[in-house]
Length: 313
Image (cartoon, rainbow, N blue to C red; front, side):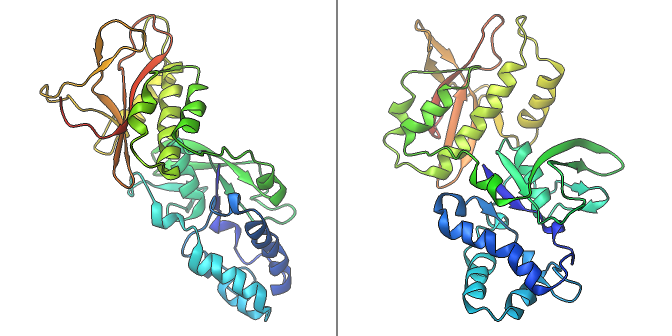
């Protein structure tokens, strides 16, 4: 789970600097007390210029408190350490996202919507007051132009710190733990030897999380294939979203007909050709090869390889 601070939820609504300080100090304390959550609460580089009172931006209000310890903690997060989602943005930078008629493409709420489309378990975090427009469990973000929207993305909206503390964080301790989590996805069939290709590579938590996100997408698509091997309407929309376009997350490595990728069938017998793969570019290039399309009558989508990018064979 990741939380993206909703820039729009800071709009000068606090009655005083002290009122704002009390709203922020709890979040700073949580970050200090829970290192496992600290790197999962993201903000934008521009959050510090958002208005928190009628006369103070976030940056101005922090210094106005004259509280040396509070200032040090706040600036360390918002000015130096982050994490800042701007530094690790993935996907199509040309995407457009709107909250009502407000462009949030380059704000935390827009990034949370983008990440949800990318299969990341992402939520927004909003600073709210009673009867606030952001005091809602779900925020509906429009993807695309307002006049011709592509879809509406439902973003879970966290409004209190206990919600974050109660979240269950999957602890990835190695490639084996990643595969254990992946094996719980009922619509996927993982080859028994996947660990063999992962072991030579030092474990990287970010790569493991991204691989799990791609596997989650494949699991969702596999669930949307009926007994006749046909995609449901939802399945077709997912394939269009993730399999089509220059920046598609999944592509056919043998689209030109010259590359052959053969892997052992998880069910035994002969090898099967699996040129379709998911791509992770982070400290190198990782691939997930899978059987596509899923054959008629086959319940689970076969995952035959997870590891570094393979040369053509």
